[in-house]
Amino acid sequence: MSVPVVLIPGIRAWHRGERQLGGLRDALRWHGLDAHIAGYSILLPLSNRTAINTVMAVVDALGGPVDLVGFSNGGVTAIQVAELGAPVRNLHLISVPLNGRHEIPGQVQKATVYHDRSDRAITAGRCYGAVTRLAPWRWRRPHLYWRADMGRHGYQGDDPRVRNVELRGVGHAWYDHADKVSRIASRIARQHAATTQPLEATA
Image (cartoon, rainbow, N blue to C red; front, side, top):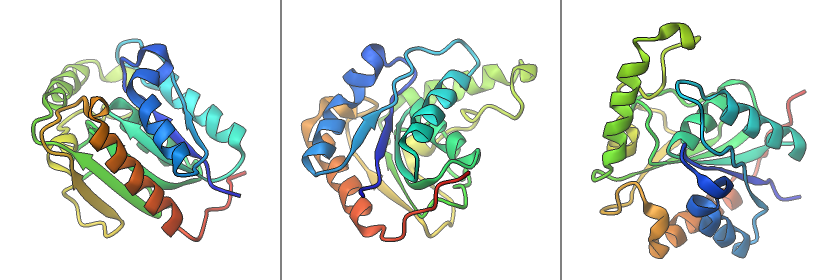
């Protein structure tokens, strides 16, 4: 049975992520993948719990290992879900406001980071992260937007599981460019097919 692919939209995803990830989901289904959008609408300030709970519920309902595709804040959510021990097999992080050396959770077999040096929304995310540091009681750990540069410059650590892909010239709205959607879908499909040892579902 094919491992499902769960797509997680960004923080301002109206229509439950269709605007941002509907095209990518359809392209993945064209490749024969079982793709789902875990839409969480807009978040309350300074909290990502709604997004995390939504994705965890989708993963639990699917009942086994999954590949996660996270765009913007959805990429932060994907990392957090994996850090909570969800059976995440592959990670695809698109325009994600994370520190370039953020550690990839141990159960993840492969991770791909899609970045663009012209992505100005990542700079805004860094500013947001700085503001949230003024209210640390709202977080059990520092906000992941702090010192976020992965979305612009890619992963900068030394983990051999991680590969960078530069999108070039589309900024944050890569989903408005059919060629970029097709390129990302093809890479996700190839990585999905190449991962031959799925994880066991967690209890």
